[in-house]
Image (cartoon, rainbow, N blue to C red; front, side, top):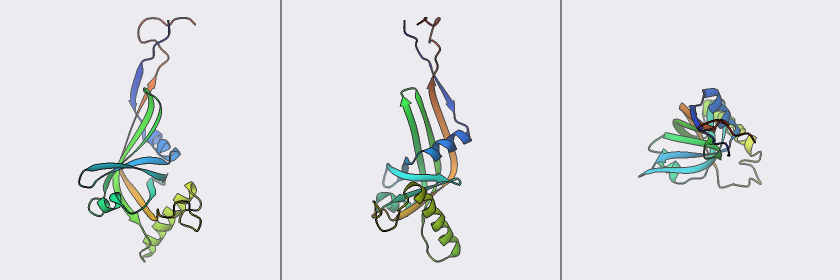
Length: 160
């Protein structure tokens, strides 16, 4: 008889959620624009901020009116072996508009993105149309995980 696995579910500690955010680079950002929408986006997580790079379009139009977003990252190995992190926060465009503070934030954001793609926003950039840098300032982080245990669902384990 084959062993059956029982799934368990649990909340992730903040350190676990941060580690998942840090080791992944594609997430989904949810926003409101006439309806709730969600789009995949490349990102870097560093110093408690999610930094993304995108092109002008629906999500940026939506952010002109509503800065609140949700952001999700998943790691999935199977139906009951996964980890998921959802972040709620406010998204802002990072741009050097003249003040020292805004210039510093823009340069920090660009440096973070270049850890993922070293030639970002330079000649030879493989995605030169993605000229907008977004920063998601995190208000809340929630993570969950599912895993299968090696124990049988019912009765003693069969010897192999």
